[in-house]
Image (cartoon, rainbow, N blue to C red; front, side, top):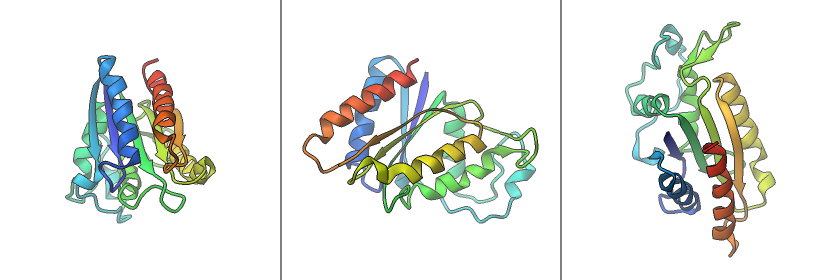
Length: 186
């Protein structure tokens, strides 16, 4: 199975990256192919709301010439997509948000009764880290759920590793990434 992980943190060695290391290690040990996409390595502009993307149905139709299409191609070629982000001000990071907004170009027949997407039925998961209690991630989880509903993604779970500066972060991260590994490998 091919798993894409999307790291939305501006810190390549921060808590979210550490949690992804654990998850990816688990998946590789089980024989799965894993590719990490750190969004900070790519130029991904924000959506400009032009709706030109609605003209194409077989591929993402965004007119912007940046790296988003590369990321979308990887997503479409995968079996599972894991979005990983720390919580900044009750939401995805500023680095992750443009990619999330640009997901609109993955829809086919937007707003129509037979609307679907280029990642329809893909298994997707959300892995969040936060410095505070888990409830600070509730808005991001709801945003993700709604985005994936629009895209007809099959959400296999939302996982939050709270209290990032707590001394037991690593052991809790290990437990949560083990659960996420189990959900992916079903």
